Image (cartoon, rainbow, N blue to C red; front, side):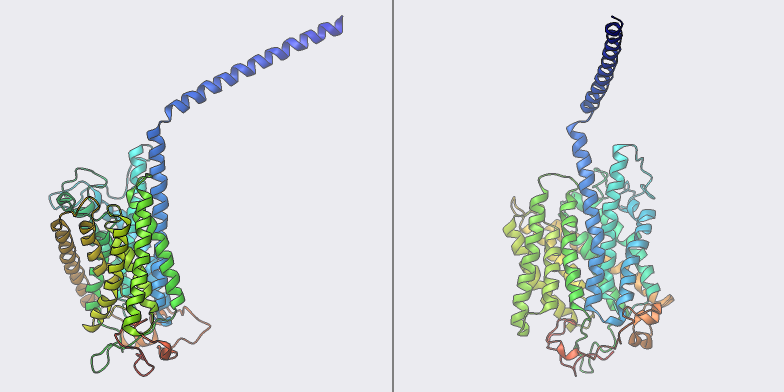
Length: 476
């Protein structure tokens, strides 16, 4: 009997424990259900938008590596480390300047000067949805600012002082790019921002053919004019001479990195995880492919052989061309836009070379000329019917006037105070040793560029209009 009694007592205790556990589980279940009810579809969409925009920002940030590889590959080995340093500091110092003042000028509440007057130093409340979005949006925009600044690096490569370049990089990140950006994109954070007068006119530039790429290119044009051509670039007869890049494999890798990053650049500009992304990405992809194909074909006819450098720049030309209209044109139109850009970049490079504007990587042509074409094409090929051209023309013209004039003045001031260009001796020695006391290739003999120059068969590395021979190649 006692065993049965004891067993009965044990069974009752067990039942009580089970009942208590069940009650506790029911409390958790009710709590979880309540929490599930609090998470709405809008919450999920908001979080998805944040994640997608951040991933896109990281892709665009990675484009800095692409620019560094392209610029270094297209130029000589003795300047490779110098170029890497410029790209690193474009991002690093430029981001600090953009945090301190640039973002506020670009996206803050408009003042009577048509620039933003708040949102400086990013003091948003991260405990709120709006604050979290502002941090996300800032990260996406700062990498765009860095892209605009780094375009200048290639056009002024191999003869510009590192210290002077840093001053310019700060100028474009803090003032030049944000001011124009406010006029065109100032309503992206604050919807009714009065200073976004180009946007209010109907200016179409979804991801920045003009706002980012042409802004960088027109500053590059000003810098290339002020600093002058590289030693040996033009012969006594005034004709351009080939200065082959030291590593086309590096340049090609850089183009592939940029190609990948551009999906973040264009599709990320949707700043929402929605159904518009696939077509934007496809348009981006097809335009780049068309640009590469047409640049290759035309260079084959022009030079007798398919040109490596022109084909690589054809990829970038197609990408820049589609950037403005990637969200509002069809796939067939994207192919046309990219193809035209691939042809334009070749003849543009040859044109600037002929007027003695030395751009070692073709940045002015890729980002400036093809940026203009892409901005016009966004209206010409608008899927709902051709959009008005006048806002596009005004936006293009204002960008050129504002950026070229301000950048030219800035470069002139730098040149007259601290000096913009290295000495002739330093240029011949190479900027790696002269500016940094370091060689990018310490285990190899780095020359001025005559060794192996006979292998250059066309305008590949220097964009001269005639095939390069050893005797024609610059010895500086």
